[in-house]
Image 1 (cartoon, rainbow, N blue to C red):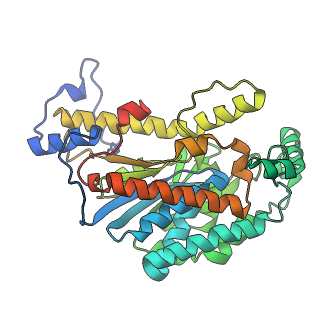
Image 2: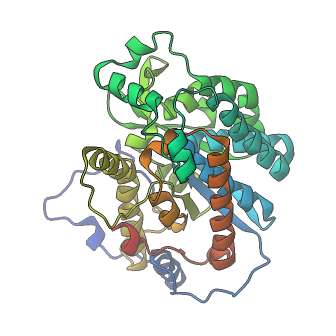
Image 3: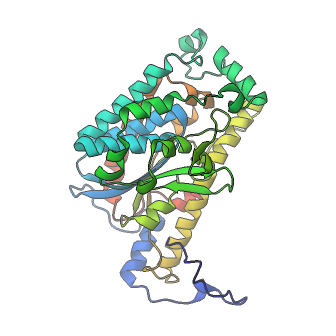
Length: 385
């Protein structure tokens, strides 16, 4: 998936179909591309002791990012897994920089400890939030906070007032947490990881990807800037909103800038819901889920298209990239959680999500780690197209 050099593109002939021109693609490469389309096309060993190198694509989702914490914690336990690049959005961007800073400090152990400190610090700060579960929801075992007086007040104010009015000093406790826990220079230069953080440019509507050279606390906050809660983040004269609108997360930075061809997506937002939403709140929540998954769905179509054309001998594999897709998700558990629980910072809830993440990551390692470097473990067409 190499981006075209737009300065050198030839004029388009009306009757010319560039993918109809047969190119010389070795049989082994075509077989590799076919295996990236869907699992089951190449023999896979039942178990492996080999080192597997992966890229990570981390979705955003507020407090649900603690699920990703659990996934990362379990992956870091396994010495067979190495990391090349990480692309993250919103909470995924925070997980990415905390991971990188900890990794630079003390490898796997440092990354695990730093993630643990970060999410527990979120719980410490969140204990003072006006948005908390009610007694009834606590007794009933609900993680939702939409009946909280604080939530209802914030929701009402957000419909008529902007954060420029309700938060003129632009205070954000998450910035203080990151400032206290993340040495951004360690994450940028000493981790050995390629980092990509996604934000949405307010002016152009385009996705902005901050790489290691541009990495800063401001970039992290830009990636996590929900426009109804915080003022747009200004960086070098440009303003940014949450990256989830245009890249949640973006896959193309991993395809363009990494030699590793295996991307592991840590999926937070449910792709599929069997029920039709009926209330106004349910409709809005589902629309938000669809919106925050839409960019990923489009990129998966592009990945599938390129893999299929290479497998069919229609694209030069030297100019385009084969990308194998893997996914760690807990759709049943995450779909059962009300959207408002993304604003629940309660320690018990964050640890609950962490434990789910650890469990499903362990299941993924057992079932699919051997497929890394061999074939996709996800049927991209069946899941995304």
